[in-house]
Amino acid sequence: LVEADPDGWWYSALLADGRLAVAFLGDGDLLERPLLQADPEAWRERLSRTAATRERVEEHGYCLDTGSSLQAPLQVLPAESSRLDSITGEGWLALGDAAAAYDPLSSHGVASAMGSGFYGGNAIADLLAGRDEARLAYLDVLQNAYGTYLDMLRGHYARERRWPDAPFWRRRHDPLFALEPIDSDQ
Image (cartoon, rainbow, N blue to C red; front, side, top):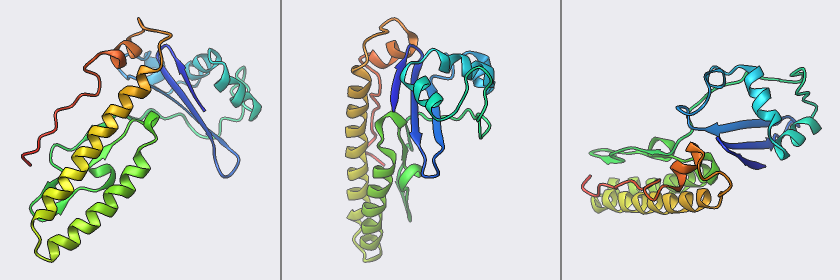
């Protein structure tokens, strides 16, 4: 379940063992200090302002009044898009998250890691067979894939229009959001 709020968005997923994983994703420089320090009370207060996420969390036995059933400590972690400046070099190729990391809203990370593993494995086999053009071919595949991802990400964020003046959403609606020059001279 994904639910937007003025400062970011909530994600929740039922795990195989029946527990519910819940995350709030926002920009660290815009969030209140108690949230950044993983303060359970600040987290509960923010969660209480949601609709669908709050309902889902309560259905799974979490009481917002007492904080009961919190089974793991809160964590604050980075989850932004990023990419290495150089994803290939003499004798090496970056694969998976080592090459690029993806905004969780895109649900693109696992598929990208698998794809880069497939193409990287083929490139490595070709390089070992003396086909030096394989490095540039791999670079081209990953460059194009990351550009396509950035286009998709802009489209995801463009759909939310309820809070045009909220800093989080204003950033994502900026025409330059997720536009990153890709250096093809690696």
